[in-house]
Amino acid sequence: MSRSAHPAGPRHADVLTEGHYAAPPADLNVLDEKVWARTVSRNDDGVVAVGGIEVTRLAEEFGTPAYFLDESDFRARCRAWADAFGRDADVFYAGKAFLSRAVVRWLREEGLNLDVCSGGELTTALGAGMPAERIAFHGNNKTVAEIERAIEAGVGRIVLDSFQEIVRVSHVAQRLGKRQRVQIRVTVGVEAHTHEFIATAHEDQKFGIALAGGEAAEAVRRTLALDGLELIGIHSHIGSQIFDMAGFEVSARRVVQLLAEVRDEHGIELPEIDLGGGLGIAYTSDDDPREPHEIAKALSDIVTRECEAAGLATPRISVEPGRAIVGPTAFTLYEVGTLKHLEGLRTYVSVDGGMSDNIRTALYDAEYSVALVSRRSDAEPMLVRVVGKHCESGDIVVKDAFLPSDLAPGDLIAVPATGAYCRSMASNYNHALRPPVVAVRDGEARVIVRRETEEDLLRLDVG
Ligand SMILES: *Cc1c(COP(=O)(O)O)cnc(C)c1O
Image (cartoon, rainbow, N blue to C red):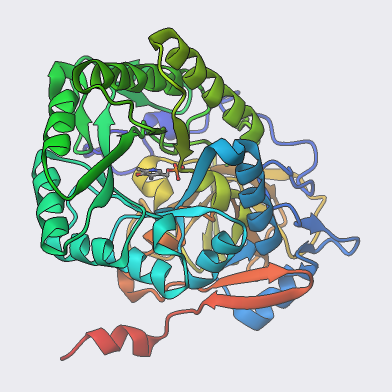
């Protein structure tokens, strides 16, 4: 989306035109199970509940805005991924989507591994008891201090992202008298978007080492030549919010080609390939995500076929879903503060949070859904834009959605599918206090990340 300046007022493409918007759903009280966490439902009294607790009670006890995370859904999704991939594959949860100590415990208990990409994420993981060998360390510019801590802790793998890092990790490992298991992250020339992928001859991004031009083959050569490194495989992550398996197909084919080249040149078959994450979820009813078992079958078929064609033994596969596990399990609960009806345009509904608790709409033009959850309403649908309370007109939470036309200040509305990349990307813009994350399960609600306080803000401000 272009960020160029434009005259005040709506852009022409934003003006409501007849037939431009999809028709409102037949009944705004119905919650599409695709976009809501599994235990969310509307009770007979019209109030929405999660894990058996009504949102009105949750708002009273924990305040708004707040993220409510359906713990049993989170655990069920972990198990679905682990079961789908079975014993011949490893599922790494991408911690950057949302990480807390409780989440680490759930992952540990449900048998998942964990991707981290900073010292902070590593500390959280280790502090909550994730065994180091189940941790993968990512990032395109890990500091020497981070590399040291990761190697000292004994992480299962470090994913090498540049030529400098190959040398750096080797150097640190040798200094610590260790041999570190590593993968090399390659860029396969596939850029995956939601519904299409574009194959590019040249890479233009900061991650990984290009397969093109023999760069990745050279990275393998250097990694094998240096002491302190044990090369266990090749890593590729092609993007985010992907629904189409075609991008993974191209990626797997090119990674397998590299494995074949490595065998031909060095006489070794690397035992693992990691196809990254990026599996899409439903933010609105228009999205149709695949189930983990379909994804697992598709990926393992692709890899098996390509390896057979290349005469290679099938390597062990890893995948790294972040959003697909945590995204659908949480919603953000807001209280409506003000409404502005702009004749012929839309109604602006202002809530008590905004871009500080969900930057994705402003950052990626992301789509979300929204529902009135504190009561039932059979009023006519109205087209709304849900906006926050920040000093910025781009402070949009939900760009276009329908809510009942009797919506009023004090109503609670909820935005589903905010489990991933919302709390983890939250900011203190306008000195907003970042909302809590409350885990709900079987009629019990428990704060797993508490709400920030003004003391928290002032603690950093040393005057
Ligand atoms: C972000 C990221 C993921 C997770 O992506 P999702 O879209 O949340 O599934 C996995 N692997 C790597 C290397 C990443 O950078």
